[in-house]
Length: 178
Ligand SMILES: Nc1nc2c(c(=O)[nH]1)N[C@H]1C(S)=C(S)[C@@H](COP(=O)(O)O)O[C@H]1N2
Ligand SMILES: [Mo]
Image (cartoon, rainbow, N blue to C red; front, side, top):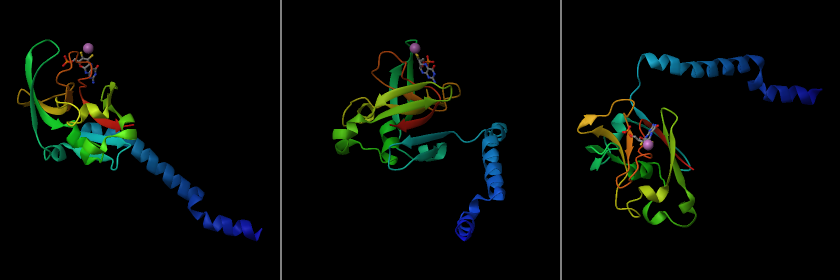
């Protein structure tokens, strides 16, 4: 049939050869984490979900954001200081609604903090917003002046004022806004 012939021509990108190339490409992508393990990548934080811009922030990007310092008590009751970036400043870069924009339907938004060990914790967006809360939640990259090593770091959430520390997520890898 002449009609089906032209249809085949216009769907030329679906030829078996093209499909094989796509398959090879995905196999390559799937194999990459194994390769990456031999050379540890720069610590990275992702912001995904319902935001204006998805972000992939490298350590060097995070260092450019304003620094915050908090003095807290750790889970064992010992004093500790943490330095890092207000989570609000990270979310603002992704275009999440904060301040006057955080109202009405936006108040249904929540954030899932994901950790390298699979631990996941939920926060409501206002919990990070300095217009709503006094105590700033930070993504810490230093404890007592030193970089935080795995499995606590390189990035750890510090939630001052929260009595139990179950939401102080260690080794944070991403924030998903849902
Ligand atoms: N990634 C990750 N973060 C985590 C946890 C975990 O299992 N995985 N446990 C939480 C709990 S229940 C507590 S009490 C604190 C303990 O913090 P610490 O290890 O600094 O004492 O970490 C929190 N953060
Ligand atoms: Mo805990």
